[in-house]
Figure 1 (tube, rainbow, N blue to C red):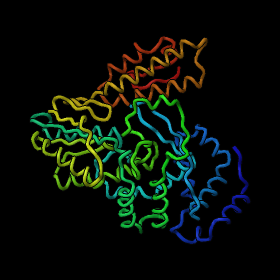
Figure 2 (figure 1 turned 180 degrees about the vertical axis):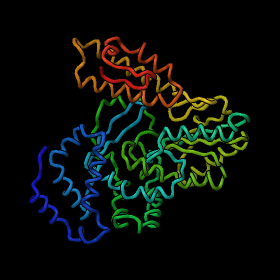
Figure 3 (figure 1 turned 90 degrees about the vertical axis):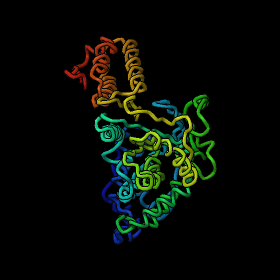
Figure 4 (figure 1 turned 30 degrees about the vertical axis):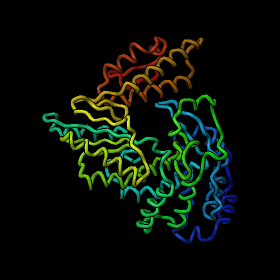
Length: 412
């Protein structure tokens, strides 16, 4: 890795405006470095991260200078299709732009957290899918008094959520919160909002780099592609800011459900909505009310084929799991994905003439332990045992150590 001399760093720092060190509302050097460290986490081996790291100090000061002077412009994104867990169109920003996304997140997320409800689970520290699953299980147990009385679960989904968001309305919602809490934000509110505006209204379709084959897009609904999104609509799936802003866009809806409709047992992960109530008819009346609110206030549509209303004893699929009375199983999609990975690793081993290399072993262990770590939180002992003792090829089992509860594996 190339290093920059202290004198060179000093010269670069002097080239920034004097207000950088005098005005506490200007972006700080440590802020851009922290954003860089956050952006490269789990991505350090990617080509973009490695290229940037070769001269990262110079590049960070250059980026900070562009941000401070207002000369920063967003670069092209890479567009491709992701097939797991479902088929999605992804726009991956360049590494330099991902640093800016983390910079925005680090400054605006603390004030956004003040207006979010507790039961919005996506892209939030201490929450996520596992927390959402535990909360829904708690909702059902609490509403049904531990399955001793009737209780119903309503699940809803928004059609083409990320591709349907109104960018102008989204920016208005963010601006309202930022201006309300501007004294608690470490940088100037107008400057930060200008940067957020550039990110929101940037059209990643223009000048994007296409990866994969044209046939990859075959079968992808137009409602799930930015190439077919209406003017001033849609955010790219794959950016940190899109995940965060997705919470902002539905935040007023969250409060409408909790406060206006008085739904105590309500939770949301991105566009997956779940409501638990004792009265089945009450839940039925909510569907047209929610549909009208989403259409009139947010220009969104409920997915007509993804409305689920069922008695809690029947079980409910949620975030890759299936919640049944007194137990939680992982979903069939996750099981299928795990089986496919094991099959691919077995085929890889069959092609190798000797023992797996250290690098291959690390990749194998990382892949398998990620599945096992996820599974061990749920009723999966028998499944974990089957994966390691039946599905895995003998060559792999001879090279690993398996803990007693089949929750993790390590190299012998």
